Length: 359
Image (tube, rainbow, N blue to C red; front, top):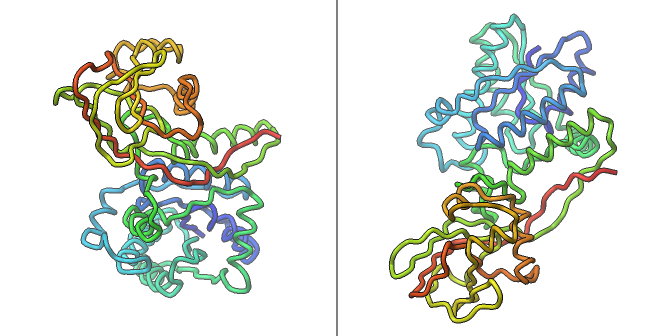
């Protein structure tokens, strides 16, 4: 039996139930999810599915990440709600490819872990699966493992085996709608031009789960814990001096009351120069290099290849900034002596992240 897999939280429980109910069947996992965006989230879910399948002794096939075809299939349905017509097209696309793959490798039946997802319609899924199975001349198996406290068991198992628990289906359109309803920033879709790994970003989770895999292979005791913290994202930062744009690097947690301010340098304390409005501060690239032990030759180089986020947070502390200070701090090659204009579009917000600790 070919088992289409959407994520480890759904598949880990579903596969174990199938192993119990169909002991004579050889189960083969098929990870095919071009609906998952961005690609880093796709990679993270695949990574955890590989771990789950390894734990359960299940062979896994990775399907093609043909995102262009998926986007074309759902064109015009971007604003549909969860369980709406976009979801139907999405199921049809993934089930179609899964049914084709099952037929291609000689399987007589296929199923999908989407059947256990509490956010999906079981009837909608079964109708799509049955139609495609009939077309390919195979059977679609649709057990209801949600009933009899199945969803609670699934959640308990996911927690017990420390699976990656995503909080959106994977679709960027569904994510945008979900975050708008929650009045939250869709920071999953943020990737800085600098490629600096941001706190509680998908890229940070990938680093953590890859490290967890290595620790498991080395039998190093560990635990994933949750931590509440103040998160930050910079959407845009701009410095103009006498109306001319000047390269400037914004340190983490730089925030303005609004999005725009202007003024001039009023005084300095040591290497930190203070503007006369909105608590804005400047340091030179030379001082940045001295304090961080780096050797950037230009601010532009720093903008596109900064050190780690934590190193820059440590720099704020070295500048005498308290942990509660959200003032804008900018790195420039020379301290401006003329009129300054600044645009800083950033967000600070309460957030929760996972942290891997060695026991």
